Amino acid sequence: MIGPDIAGIAERLGVAADTATAIPQLAAETGLDVDGAYAVQTALVQRRLGRGERLVGLKMGLTSKAKMAQVGVNEVIWGRLTDAMRVPDGGTVDVGAYIHPRVEPEVAFLLDRLPEPGEPMGSFTDAVRAVAPAIELIDSRYANFTFSLPDVIADNTSAAAFVVGPWSAVPDGLDNLGVLLEVDGRVAQVGSTAAILGDPRRALDEGVRLVGRHGVRLRSGWVFLAGAATAAVPLAPGVHVRAVVESLGTAALRASS
Ligand code: OOG
Ligand code: MG
Image (cartoon, rainbow, N blue to C red; front, side, top):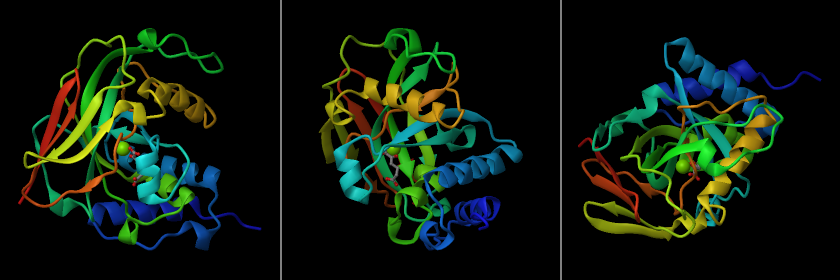
């Protein structure tokens, strides 16, 4: 039997993102499984690198129950971040460049010394140089923001843009910090970092373990998004969005009108 057309699927997803045009889900129709989906993701990101983008980090997805429930997928997933996705703190995103953008509050880690392949994870304070509040803008390339597990993995876990707030030294505890997502000064989501696998530090252990299976290594200097603590909120034109993480501060973005 001939397997799914990895390059062809990556091209369809890439064009959907480039043209902000939704496409139907494709995993079921093409017989794409989880390993095939990560191969599509690699090809999709390679397509970006081929036009000059640089890998700058990794994102975890569906590390909280709120997120799993919102999209109906119950597995932790990961995707890649490139420099073109990064928006400066307080910067403006062009809503017209996306299909149905949503925003979610995140905790970001600035990676430092990571284990060699095959080695166990060392201490968190060796691995992480700094932490920051962040906002992720996700934009599924699938119609109605609806997908299966392999579909969302192939689509680079809906990654579209991200904002990182000010970095600070790693605090003693990260496991129960209050999280707010505000839209135009009104609270749209409330949560706690405890929602992220019980402690966002666990997202890094999971990330190291999961990417290792695919021969991927986390790099010093990369940004690592631990996954949203709350459900995501649709991003309407013209709004101002702020993520507040207790003790860490805020990250903000504005949507173009
Ligand atoms: C998948 C990406 C999930 C997170 O933080 O949980 C994610 C999606 O919800 O479209 O980025
Ligand atoms: Mg996210």
